[in-house]
Structures are given as C-alpha cells and as structure tokens.
Length: 68
Image (cartoon, rainbow, N blue to C red; front, side, top):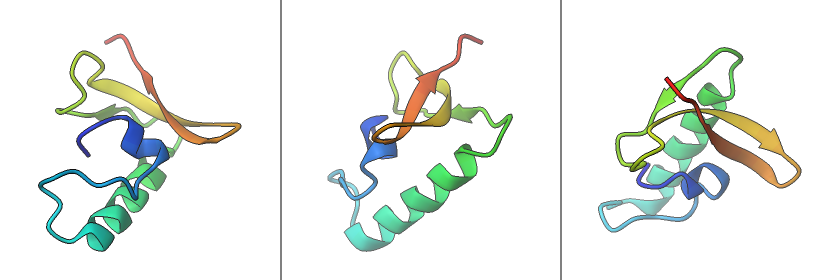
C-alpha cells in the first residue's frame, strides 16, 4: 500500500501497480489480516503514521495510528 486511504479503498491504485485487479485483491487480503485483534501494521509509505491498526468505522476499515 502506498497510502492509508487504500485501507478504506483498496481498489484505488498507485502508479507502481502493474496489475490493478491483483493489487486491489492483495490489499483487501492484507486489510483483513490487519483487522485481526492485537495486530499492529507497519506502513513504510505512510509518512509520519507508519505504525497503526485497522479498525472498522461506519464507512469501512480505517488506519488508526499507534504511538510506539
């Protein structure tokens, strides 16, 4: 993933995504894994919010930064 917004919208591609459908599928599977209780993710491309958890809100999954 290249941005935390792709947690909510995994179908939004970035320029390096050569196969957009496959990339979106991978992001959906990764989001499902990150939603597991106790899981902390590391988003190397997420600027100043690299550590976080994925939680559901009223609109879908959202990246919540964790202060580590």
